[in-house]
Every structure is written in C-alpha cells, then in structure tokens.
Length: 536
Image (cartoon, rainbow, N blue to C red; front, side, top):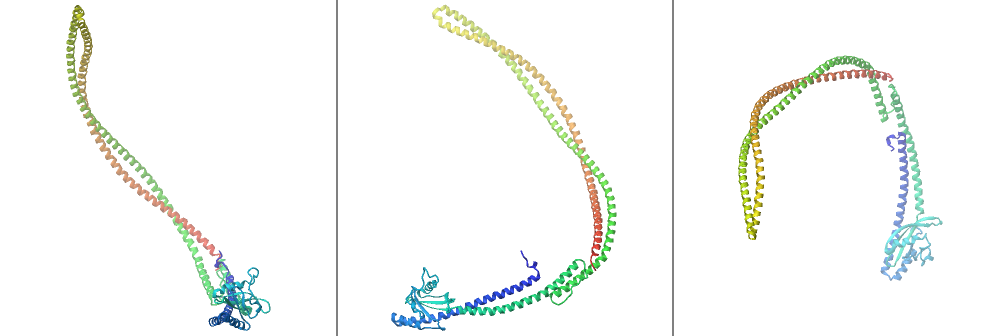
C-alpha cells in the first residue's frame, strides 16, 4: 500500500499543483454545464408561459362560445401568434393528427409519426404521453436549423382535455450551445492563465523547499559518516530555517558530548580494570573459603547420615521390641487361655469318665437282661416243641395248633439267634467301655499335668514380657535421643550449606563482576576506538 510519507516532497508539491489544475478544469466543465442547464430552463419557462397564456384564452373561448366557433377562433388565434421573433405554436390531437400549424399548412389533418418506420419521429408519441388528459411536460429531440444543420430542439406541450387538443411550441438550442461554447472558451482561457501561474508558483515553491531539504540531507549524511563539524547554512526564518538552526544546535550538542565521552572513556577503562582486579582477588578468597566450607559440609553430612542411621536402627529396635512385647502379651494371653481350656478339658474328661463308667454298668445290666431273654427263648422253643408233639398226636384236630406251635418255635429260634448277636455286641461294648474308661482316666491325668506345665510356662512368659517391655523403653529413649541429635546435626548441616551457598553466590557474583568489569573495559576501549572515527 502506497503511503504518503513514502512519497518524495517534490512529488507531493507536484501533486498539489496537479490537483489544483484538475479542480479548475472540473470547475470549468461544471460551470459550462450549469450555464447550459440554466439557459435551457429559462427557455423552457418562456415556452411554458406562452403556452399557458394561450391555453387560458382557449379555455375562455370554450366557456363563452359554442365548441365549433370556439375552435375556429382558437385556430385563428394560434395561427396568428408569434413570439421571440419567428417562433410559433402548433396543435395536435391525442391521435397525433395535426390541428394547427402556422408555418406548414400542408401538415394540417395529417397524422404525425409512424410507429413502424419513422424512428426519428418518436418524439410525437412522447408528446402525446406527456400531455394526455390535460397534463404537461417538456422534451428535447433532434431537429434541423434554418441552415439545414442538425440541432437540438426544446418543446413544451400542454393538453386541453375538453377538446383532446395538445398545444405545443419549441425553440432551437443551437444558439444556447454557441453561447455556452463561447463562455467555455473565455473560462478556459482564464483557467489556462491560472494554471500557468500555479505551475510557475509550484516550481518556485518546490525549489524553495527542496533545495534546503537537499542541503539538510547532505549535511546529515556527513554527520552520519562521523563529520560533526558540518553545519547547515540558515538562509531564512521560515520553518526550514528553524529546522536547520535546531539541527545545527543538535550537532553541536552531540559534538560536545562526544568530546566529553572521549575524555571519560579512558578513565572508565582504567576504573574497570581496577574493579576487575579486585573482583578477581575477592573471587579467589571466596573460592578458598568455599572449599573449606565444602569439607565441613561433607563432614556434617557424614555425621548427619551416621546419626540418622543410629536413630533409624534405634527406632527399628524399639518397633521390634514393641512388636515382641505385643506378641509376648498375646502369647501370655494364649497360655492363660490354654490353661483355662485344659482345666475345662480336665473337668470334661472327669465327667466323661463318670459317664463311661455308668455306660459300662448299663452294658453289664443289658447283658444280664439279654441272658434272661435267651433263657426265655430256649424255654419257649421247648414248649413249642412239646406243643408240636402233642398236636401230632391229636391228628387232624391238632393240625392247626401244630402250625402255630411251629411258628412259635421259629420265632423263639430267631429270638435266641438275635439274643446271641446282641450278647456279642454287648461283649464288644463292655470291652470298649473298659478301654475308654481307662483311656479317659489317663487323659485326665495328662490334662492335670498339662495344666501345671502351662501355668509354669505362663509365669515364665510374663517374666519375658516384662524384660521385653524394659528393653523397648530403653530403645525408645535411644531413638528419641538419636532423633534429637539428628535434628541438631541437620540444622547445623543446613547452616553450613547456607553459608556454602552464600559463599558460592558471592564467588559467582565476584566472577561475574570481574567478567563485567573486563567487558566494561573492552567496551570503553571500543568506545574510544569508535570515537576516533568522528571528526571533532
């Protein structure tokens, strides 16, 4: 995008002159066009006044006379009417038939304009459209002047609705165009003179502005190259003269400042060298101190680590003894619970022994009852046998009894067999009861011994718990003391580390100061070298 500040001053001044010339030319054409419009408007107002005056007379005739008589008098009036020299009026109806034409009577009764062929006569249709039903309007259309040359013609038409007439009149505009052309020539000549004057003034003003600017540019170029003795000649008191004077003052101020800079640059370089030397000595001293602090910090770290290990082992011992104490307490409780359980078991074993003895006695009683049942079954078997014998003797009469006796004998036989089996089982039960009773007595004795042993173990475990608790308390005290010592050692370590860090920062600061001082000395030397490039 083109910016105004990027354009040369000469081009800007030329643009001002060009804009002024274009403005004058535009004003010339606008004035000529406005003159033509004013003359045409004046001509149209004249035509309108004539037609409306005639139209008022026609309207009066229409109101006072019969239509045919009024139309005849109106035609005579219009045929005789002339204005502004040889200008006349004409009348057509809304069907484009000529009613009155003072100059060309041969056109009366003829239809004007042909919609199919007469392209140049289209203005007749426009007249009809403008003046239909008593309306009015103006139009400009091509015509020929008295010499037969093409010329524009202005016509004004106004309709008279009662008769369907359209009254019109026109004037050629070639005289207006000639007058406008003459005025255009006069104004163009004046514009040409003004343009030449503007061009001359533009050249003079451009030189008056550009030459001082070129001088300022050349002097500033010398200043940029290091020549501070250059001065701009002040030729006037305008803005350019003021700018030149202020630039000269600025160059003089820069000259004085550079002279002072040259004088102080060497002093700054010497001071920077002294500062760098002092900073180097400080850095070496701080490095030595930092090494000693590093050794002290290393020793403190080792002591802190050792104390931390002792504290950790003491804490582990305390936790282990505490866990052992808890486990011993749980074991003591378990031993007491075992003693109680064994005592309860011994009691239950005594009760079970009594029950087994009672069971043995019951089994013995069942054995006796079984013996009785066995004897009864044997006697029943004998009785059944005797009954069978007696029934056999009785013959047919004792047959039924013999069957019953046989069934009884079978029953007695099965009973005796079952009794033998029961006796066998009872004998086994007796043996088991005796064995169980003996075993229960032995278990009761063992339970009593277990109770005594468990009570002794519980007493020993209680002593162990007490000793473990004592050890746990001592370990806790050791851990607490070790933690306090570790905290103190850690605090000392932090202090030593802080001193070491401060020493490191001081060493870095001293090193940085030395480096910056060396840089400052180098910059001072460079400044001195650069100042020698200026012409003072």
